[in-house]
Length: 543
Image (cartoon, rainbow, N blue to C red; front, side, top):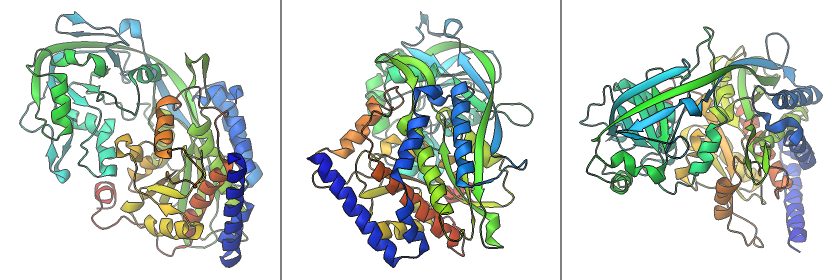
């Protein structure tokens, strides 16, 4: 009976869109051409065991990339690379920690890799080591603009800093996300003379379990290489970067006269002060390297306006996932159906929808399928740093596991509050009859966890749209719990496959939302701009 009701509900939505289409312009009438089955078909191929989880540098990724490239051809997208093709080479360096040759001692105690600590690969070279005193620095954040400084009154030069992998709850959602990022914390530590870092999650952090973190690190680390062949964002001044098991973290505080629990409490309450941990750590990291020929795909629809066609709205979705890894429940292929075969499928249907228009939008529309998102937003960062486009990117819309396990009644438009893109978001939501909701779980720091953030760092306004938790009356499931629960049980495991209860009509709603927003940006005589006084506009936009 529930399935029948959902079907009726979906039909009502479709009828509603049909009525809207009769009243709207060509862009709205075009909504009727969106095909949920096309999304399902693309996802089914990209999430199949055939492509072996699509890890960069593998045969499976190459097969998946070739499939997407043929879909760009079928749709009729113009190749956007200077050589007349779709493929943008992304040179990558992969590093995997040799666990047997990596060690950490804390005082006189030798720790066990994978049980008490893990280490990140040291990307500049195969061998790295450091021996230094430990200093606790709360969140490891210095943010004068937020009147906050974890380093106040302490000297960390030549020391290893220990911090929590989070940011103050008092920060606004997206600023909180920004200051949680590793590069921000690493650069702050380096600026103050630290030689290593140890991060630790709060106990019961819902973002990831310790077991999942260990499993994830076995996949290695990737960095894209610059023209000189050097890895980008390698942080060579930090001779060791380690993560500590929160269940064992009391060992870090054993000589300090304070407890791990008190550090958690004082940090969460905003009352943490830095202090010496009165213990020495020695960390040795051995890294094994391989070169990986990574790649993005870039296609476009050229704008119809002679002047505005040299301005670009970029849609981005990542193709990669974790490949074949540690078995979970007897399965070792990390298919990545929702993360992010779904985003690629939705992006291709957005491209098809634009091609169905009787006339191309005024600005050019670019569709980028990027690599290495799971390993640090690598493909999008490479594209944003090495753009093949002869013009200006004015906006980015990223599609990454947007959530469509139920009909969509509201959206969460991450980034909308920072720029004029909010105008197009509100217009689109009104046309589609959707609500707009705030970030439901700021502790998840979603804002910095997908490819749109690579464009924000280049000063380009961007959006990352997820579905909200509002549901139809017959839905008895609390989606605020089930969607968060998905992250702790299915996310980044082999169980993210096509057996999940996807709602492909809801997936089509994501096409409609992102397509209309991009269309209205493309038609606007003014390009998007940061809001006056905005945090990200001030940090990354034009000075």
